[in-house]
Length: 225
Image (cartoon, rainbow, N blue to C red; front, side, top):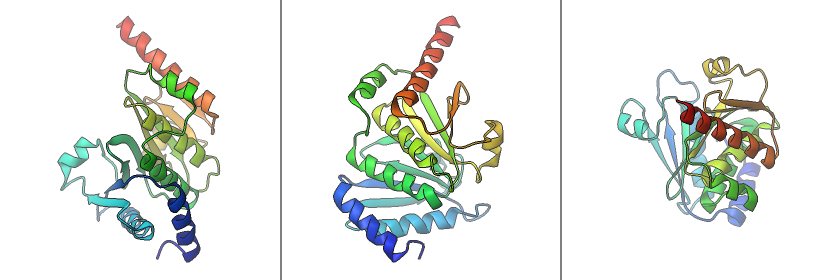
C-alpha cells in the first residue's frame, strides 16, 4: 500500500469537496528499463480506488505495443501520466509524482475535473490571443517546496488554451533533459524548448508575461522568415 490511511482520508475529503466531472488518467509504462513505472501504475490504481465511484478512470499503455496511442498523445518517455477530461488538455507528468509532487498530481486531476482553469479573468482574456503552439516544460524534483505551484500554474495555462501544453518533468528521472536544458535549480520553466526560460515559482502575472513574451517571439520569427 503506497497511500497511508491518513493520506487516503485526506484525499477522500478533498475530492468530496472539489471533484466535479470524471477524469481519465493514461499511464504510459513498460516493464523493462523503467524502475518507477510499476510504482506509477500502483499509485494511480490505489488513487482511483480511494476516490471511488468511477471518478478517476485509468488506462495503462505501452509505448511499444500501443504505438499509435503513444503517437497520438506525443509520448516518448516512460513513465508518462496524461490527465484528460472531455478532451486532452495537453497535461503531462513525466516521472513518478512522489514526495511533494504528489500534490501536483492531485491538483492536476482536480482542476481537469472542473473543466476550467484557476486563473484570473485578466489572464484568461490575455490567453485568448494565443494562436500558436506553446509548450511549457516545468522541471521539478520531489523534494522541492516551490515546484508544485509552478507545475499547477502551467497545468492551468494548458487548460485555458488549446494552443498551450504543459509537461511537468522530474529532473532526477530525466537527467538527459535536465542536462539539455541546463537545469541547475528547480522549478525551472522552459517554453518552446528554450525560446524563453525562467527559474522559480512566479506569480500568475509574471508567468503570463513569460508566455506572452514567447508568443511574441514566435510571431516575430514567423513574420521574418
